[in-house]
Amino acid sequence: MSKILDLIRYILEKYKYKDDLSKARLNKIIYLIDWVSAIRRDRQITPIRWYYNYYGPYVKDIEKAIQEDDRFEIKKGLNYYGNEKNVIFLKKDEAFNDLKEEEKEIVDFVIENTQNLNWSDFMNLVYSTYPIVKAEKFSNLDLVELAKEYKKAQK
Image (cartoon, rainbow, N blue to C red; front, side):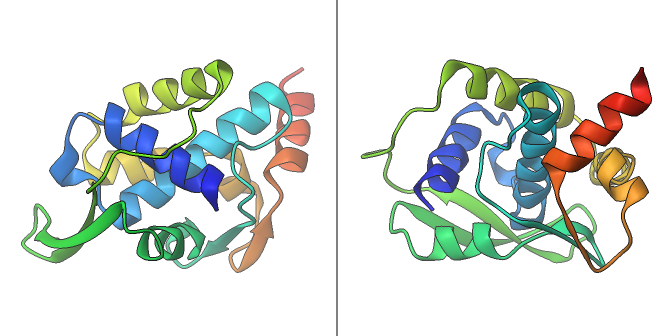
């Protein structure tokens, strides 16, 4: 879990729109980070076993890690449409391990390319990724194997 927490802390540090970093958006950002890492490095940054459910790639590992760590806080807020959302905040910035430079580059790339997208455009991006296009709903997503397949199809 520590790798997930280190990653969340780094995302929170870099993400420009802190009040917009909902639990759902954070989950999808981490999925995109793992997907980009699988393409570039043939491995994910996190140990997460991704699952394709009703709402795209989603796992409870992220929320569980946040809830079990007193350095983070989940606050209730409202989204653009007035519906309730859960927003992630960092309470204490201490005792985290730093990410490797190549991992930071991937996180920075994903954040730079997603943080200015509204929810609809962001979700369109997530749903356009190869794993989601190729996989069936309610299945596990082996991002490393799907990245190999994706790169082979690009040649």
